[in-house]
Image (cartoon, rainbow, N blue to C red):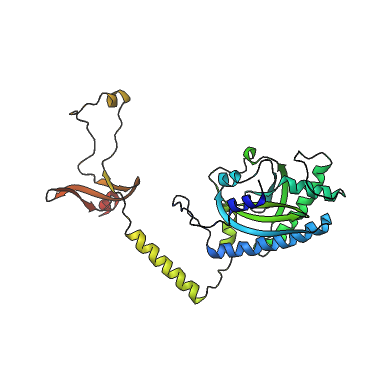
Length: 307
């Protein structure tokens, strides 16, 4: 897969994106600004490191910052690729630093005095692996420098993997923050990435002082909040009124026929539950309003006992 195609799949595309309310995007604009500063600082220092260490013109530039699920991130990676599994002490969780295997082989070729250029895709030898670990540890040092304005971290390289499908660093549905980079080593280009667990980085961002907004930005935020509130207030919601559940044997359920009577066991002195999506938010007693069935909302049983 070419770098151009992979960049468009990870971000930078045009057009609307579907919003999943079951997985809300919780990164605010201020959080993304703060992360962008740290990731761009890492990119600049990492590009300088690669140029001096490999003795060839290299650069690293930030493409995008996204919030994904772990399985979405894994699906976006090439196979094989080089993935460094990293611990960021004292933060919990596992961080991943991923680079294309062709770029890694080119970097190793330069470290061994070679000219670079196209390289074969193969596992690293016992001689090449220490070279790669040394380069990754230097890059993680630049990551520490990039994040020092947020928190003092101690990156620790644990292991190196080649196939993300076999790497169980997180659960498939876990939220993660992914920074994608365009990495150039000589004539070789690839898209690299850094994965941070969302639950790890969010408390760090929330401790930072809020960025002062301009009057125009505050007005846009207030307008958006008002429109969202009005839209949600008018959204239709399915509401159900239910009796207390009962337990029945499987054969009794199978033998049910029209006209059979099933005792509910719901005491007449106990109000019914008013629910939305299986969540009880009120209690009511049954009744009618004209020719229609209705219910009257009453205080919860506990509050009624206190009175």
